[in-house]
Length: 329
Ligand code: PBG
Image 1: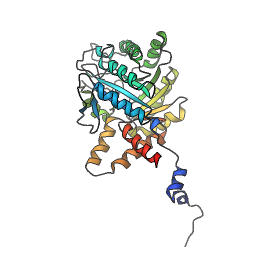
Image 2: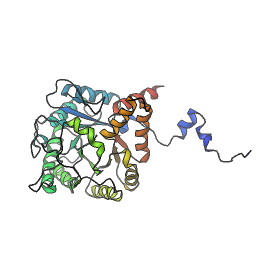
Image 3: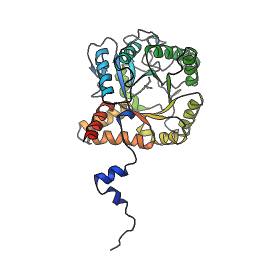
Image 4: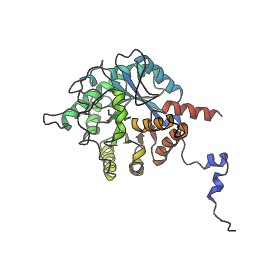
């Protein structure tokens, strides 16, 4: 019989050794819960393709944010679902638009127990579903859109958002928004740049969540899924433009990009586990094809292992509950 000298299994022999040898840990503070708030909703409404996730009413959103804070979650990322949309996304810059109303309500509810964050993008508010203003030739006009983002940033910051998630993928958006914020005294409002945001099929269920339909596709502004270097380039540009945090999105299919960005970044790196990633695991688990809890934990652990300091995930609240139970054991 051959007796190996080197036995990696030694460190896997029992739970105590495995716990001590673990390279990556999950913690509620590293999780951000995305939340949808629907204008006019009297009660939470289910989202067909995202079982377990709801479109909140203002009241239920306040309660969910308070619960998230109590569970020790790092933050909530708010998305508005307006009743009326138009070509320029007027609801985004209306102080009485649903996202801004919800931001005030939630900031008022949770104080600074967690970081209240808002999606800064026009797609929830435009009737064509694009992230920016569409010009006569049908293309999304970068520089006109930057002006809208600057207005949006000021209204969101004034509403009490501490961290703006710039998810529109317009060139120069970080510098443009930073300049607008600084020029109006919001020097401490944090800018999260969705730096490497890919034109992904995994955003599918999000359309149900915000009830938006898209004319055409987003390939002229979101990254080509084939490109890895380009994701790193976008992150570098955003760092140079003054971003406070960079993000890779989606997460699970882009762990290589995430690892590259984590290796080069001098600022925190986050990742967004998007609606389709959520829906796939939920669907497989509902069929009894995978163990739901193990798959959820493994998927988020993998995102952290690849280099994300924090993760936006629709399972944030539930995962925090599991982690808190375990911590108490
Ligand atoms: C843009 C935005 C989107 C998502 C987050 N911010 C939609 C898109 O770019 O198509 C998708 C998130 C998800 O799928 O969970 N407002």
